[in-house]
Length: 403
Ligand SMILES: *Cc1c(COP(=O)(O)O)cnc(C)c1O
Image 1 (cartoon, helix red, strand yellow):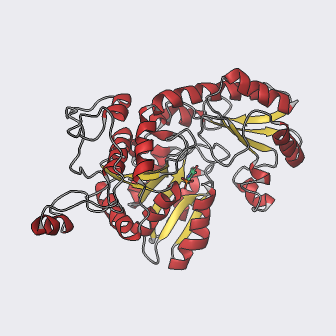
Image 2 (cartoon, protein in one colour):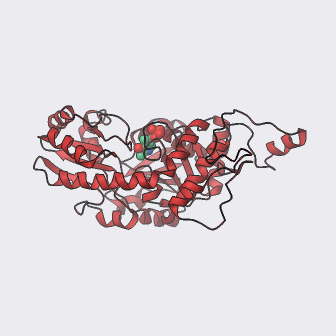
Image 3 (cartoon, protein in one colour):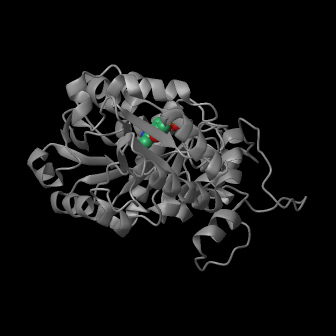
């Protein structure tokens, strides 16, 4: 049993043959109730009833797949996970309260004392803290490779290594790693390859195709895309998901039915939103690249991106995040942020509203300058999460702030 378990309400009479991505995102839904509602209702219930003692026994021994208690499964979380499974091409999955609870639960469920992780150095800040501060408490250690030196990855692998971990594109420097290469290494050394696919979304990139075993998302970002709810999800190999499900069922990081219901609605429009996000982001990147007060711009679908060819191979579109460096270092970065009028200064990303951040003075200010440089965070680096406002208005705001 997993998060993809079909509870009593199940997929609505879609035929078995696979549909296109957009159709799966919209038409994967719970079976209609007697009310014949068009969209799935919200099941705000903490538990489910048993018909009799035998039903209860069979449910607890898992002879029957059904909802018992919403810490385990709930129809709304099942619907959300089913959609993500279809979109990523995954066998199974489980949904979590946040992206970080998905990441923590995945590692905690699969690793034992003594195990070792090989991870890209440029990863989400809290994931880095999990690896460096908390997992070592349980004698789980991590070695980091430089994402721009993939030829060194194998040198970090030891007999204790169990997981290979990466994000692509990375945050905030927008570096790209070749997923096919990671898949080959994982296969050669029999490692579990886990990819945080949050920046790309399944619409742009599907890591399971390249040999990843598990894909993790913070659904808080582009999946919801409207800055409303927190959520997370892990999908992939059914045996691994089963372990993760059992861990989660007993430790309680479940996604709430309300957030799952909201996220299921969000996924129905993911492809339309992401198309426009990426169209706007490419225009913003081209504008910045031509600006005299900008040192450099990193965007996967700009020809100047060092891994442009890899990006083109594995990504359908370039994503909505643009990184660039303003001339003049830390001061210039801060001044630029202070001059922004319309765009938001916020910690989120992947929202309808364009968000501008300056990592060196905010999210990554606790790192020493040399540690920031290892992950390509220079003092003047600015990250823009390009939103869905009219692109001319986004560009004018950035332009007046630069000038
Ligand atoms: C935001 C984010 C996370 C964490 O997700 P939360 O939902 O905030 O817990 C993990 N990975 C990446 C790449 C993110 O951007």
